[in-house]
Image (cartoon, rainbow, N blue to C red):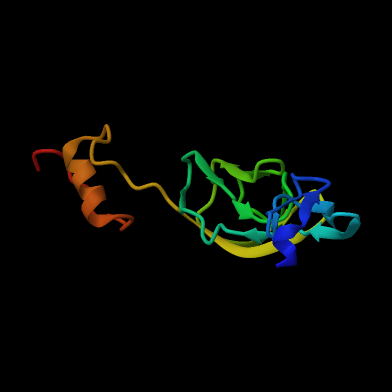
Length: 171
């Protein structure tokens, strides 16, 4: 066939390479000139390789605990790196977003569930968004809390119930 008799080349092998059979394989986004020649006959064509669509791959965030340090990093694929990150809406009190890394960090100060949208933007201006939820809970009382055993046991077994009568050790 003619394609295997031709000599093929790409002006930018980082954008695309061309096999001896004339099949171009994409490398990175950009434009290259694909050329072919057989003897004194030659031709060329521009080939533009576009980046894959930008997609936020973080599907959910781990729950946070009030008063405990939190860290979760957002992730995306496609587009052209590096990505910039932003929040549409509001993060829970005590948490911040690092726009260059997509890290959500800090110490939550209130319980509840926050709903917000994250946005990634690549260097070419392509954007993607994803709605996320971040639940935060109050910290429980650890079993080894430095409390008298009778008080710790009452708190662990009765939670936030209001005690109407006081008891003391040994009574």
